[in-house]
Length: 148
Image (tube, rainbow, N blue to C red; front, top):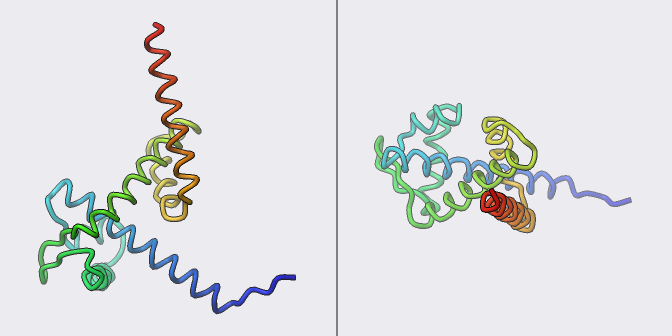
């Protein structure tokens, strides 16, 4: 029987939650920044369905990590490092969502909901497999269109 060190497991889960949370904030800022040139605490809180004090606390952590620029009570933008991470998460989200729509026939809303959960835990190998599937699927459609 394998004995699991409960403290180590708790710490790993806490770190995963922290990483997932960071990715959600960065992705949200990325989306808001692309549509409004910047984000505000209130916009992030509304979009994620959490309190403004929770967002403020998270923004302070992200600023300390060099992932965002934050004016006191003002605009929030991604740093170059933050934008790179946010783009990676957003790419995963869009790719997984498209895969769930194409392969399983999920509605766009259902696919997006599930992609939002999956994007934080998917392995690189699985992500490459999904991208390969979508490339083959697109090539098949292109071949089909040329034949008609």
